[in-house]
Image (cartoon, rainbow, N blue to C red; front, top):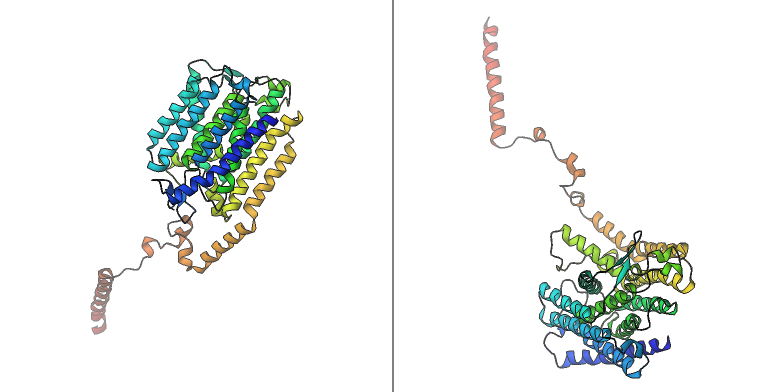
Length: 433
């Protein structure tokens, strides 16, 4: 455990030191595309560097180099091409994200770059072998399916982290919690001899956590630098690699050791639980844009963090709420791993309920609702309800109730006059008689 912690600390310290240097270069030298101006979707009001991925890649490479040079992870690097493939794939996704940050790549170009990184992982053998489908069985991936699953897994993870990166510190905090939790899970599997020592998954997970911890002090609100697509894609790759190498290679019979019921869904379902927040946000984003007949790459303000802010939560509180959800899900996963028992559903349920109540009943939310009601009552009654809504249907006059105007009224008066004249003519003979 201590060797892994040292590597994670190296990643954190290097990222912590290099990040302000990158920000200083962006503000003084002004390389093209390193600064991002405020826009309709952003919450910042001044230009900010968005190439924090440079510092994150530096921290990752320094940690991998340290792990290799010290010889503490000789079993991982000796006669194993997977670490080389992971480093090369990380560089590929970083370059794709960096080009998108400074030049705004077209979506097909970004997808092509991520697919290329997946091919690199496949070429060097950094892929999953099998996985358990809940309520079904263990599926052994054939040679034809491995590259396809690798591509889709990497695409899903990179997009999930990129989409959740909408508020200061949100993506870095969620990945730090998720990667740290997944490292503890992988390390426990290794202790139980369910995961080979040469598997680089735990090493990648602890490095991902360290990189995020080092980046957070500069990225938490008010952020002095953003990770950009380069950093988001890098974190997505690190999470994709660690989860696939652990979840796709751990002994599928893990339920025989810990948590019979719980680990029936393990091990591939566990990263899905840990990364529940970004995955749910991605799924809803796809559904939302598909229902509106929009392209999947069209940006909007319908993500989870945007909705929390619309409820009345501030920037920091919205981030902390989503961090808390990640902690709850991670705790649900880690408890059976560390205690060899099924997870306590009642405490987890109480924590989830408390988060829900805090989210919807916080004083700031009630205050915003009261302000909205007050603003609505200040408007004229005719403007408080849209005339086109069904409840206004009864207020609309029927066609026969509409008073005639203009020429129609004149014609009606003329007809009335004619009738009166005819009555006068008919009455005259009786009078003379």
